[in-house]
Length: 419
Image 1: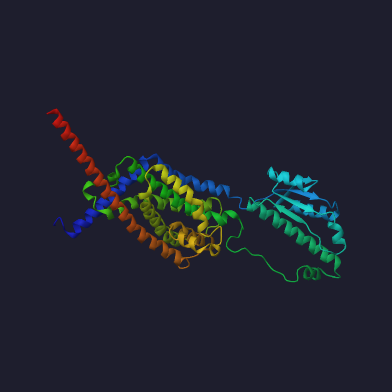
Image 2 (image 1 turned 60 degrees about the horizontal axis):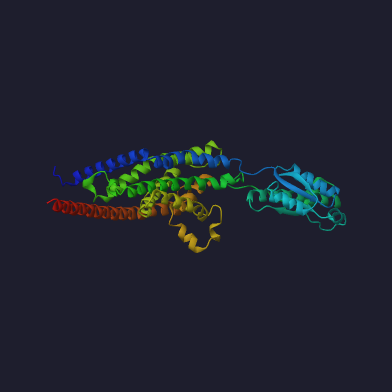
């Protein structure tokens, strides 16, 4: 067989790619930073998030009561509030200023105010008001207080309607209080909890951010020690850019396909979150997503001069990337610029696709837009990674030749001085 034969070159390319992959895997476990961000963080960080959000909704939110009415109706309203699962009456205040002070100290998260004419207006058949003041710094407590107050107000209104009606049967009372009946049935997020709404996005974002950290740390280490050429353990194949990129990406992919299975399949079930994924759909989504993230990280590695730079970059972008996916703020309400900017990042399509798969039981056909976008990003970022690595290696060779030339001139000057 000729040395330059096609079969020989294929075998040689596969061998070199595997060699680079093994070399990179060894580096992952030798470097403490890579070990932490690529192994320990994906293992334990999702558990922390899942444990924090595991209660799904807040219960027994403390509120203060300011009752200027001192009537049976206001006390009945307060008792019904306290009996709800969402609110706990913690303080009775003599003024709104006192309740405001408690809110400032975070001892209560809201105030229920009854004016002095509350019962009189009800007795005269007029519309009475109950003021609800909420601490808006935490949306979950606001939702709990407002929803509970609204439910109690609706219940008392129904009782007042029944007492003033001339109905004879319970069915007549039902028609009087609810002429248009409805059933509230939550779709997909049946628990109406915050954890089931936000956790799928957080889990997928953890995969991307830790991968970017690992790839950036590896590139920063090589650049700090001025040995970018060590990215390629086979010196004679510096020009085999495809082998370099494929070998390094295979090392990260082989590790993170296991992490992806753990994060997307095991973690939600450990904490009893909604998970409707199937093997076919999750594999079909995770393969292009991980490849797109890996090649994207390898492309961005040219911006990492020091190891600390990538940490600042990834931490700074984590929250904006989560917002731009549209899971915490409606995508339709975002400016067109930010919607287009979000297409740069694989997490945008990965989170949207996984949310539909996990919470809605979607198939690959249902997430065809996200699926195709991830494969397109994989193709684009693969070639950009090849260009970046080619440029870095050429630059490294130029620096090496310049150092050798400088050393030769220094040696020559030293020899001339000795002579």
